[in-house]
Length: 220
Ligand SMILES: [Zn+2]
Image 1 (cartoon, rainbow, N blue to C red):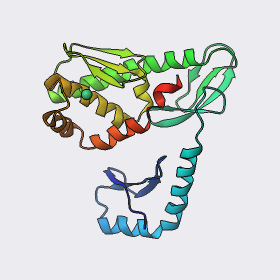
Image 2: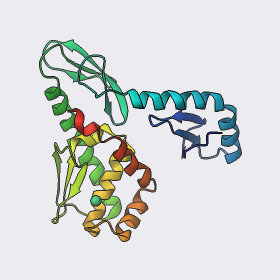
Image 3: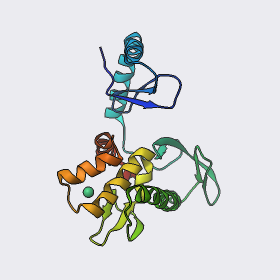
Image 4: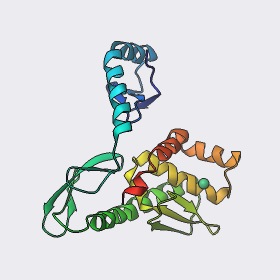
């Protein structure tokens, strides 16, 4: 029997089973759903779960290096958005998909768009968490770093790679919390991780997500 890797409880009203891109079973459930209820649904859906697990693992092995072109998908806040090359000059994002020029280097307009969103999103998330935690970074910059998602300088200036916003918002928030905690602790000591855990109880899963998706930084 395949057991859930993680059960996420939210304000939703139904139980959903998700087999993620790593082939792990994730359950999303309402706060009031009992463990028995979840367990019996998981048992009932075993055949489907097994099929999906095999499928996802196979897809993962076969996944070719991503290219920026028509027919490909690119992640924005954890959602895979299709790329269409159906515009003459400039492109845009319609909330679901990217519409980019038919010719020319697509990486430039796409990375410019991501950078602008990253500015907006990260400044907002930093101010939310800085207030919650009662800390004050000296500034926030968005970089094109391809080796690190974020950093905090000795003078408490935060840097984030715009690639970070390819990740789901809860992972973005984890990196924000991580860097803000460096204002208190300039190391990765036990005290540091305790502070991170106070503001992000799922930080281990989020850290794993970043490890599994470093390819986001390689695409553009
Ligand atoms: Zn760190």
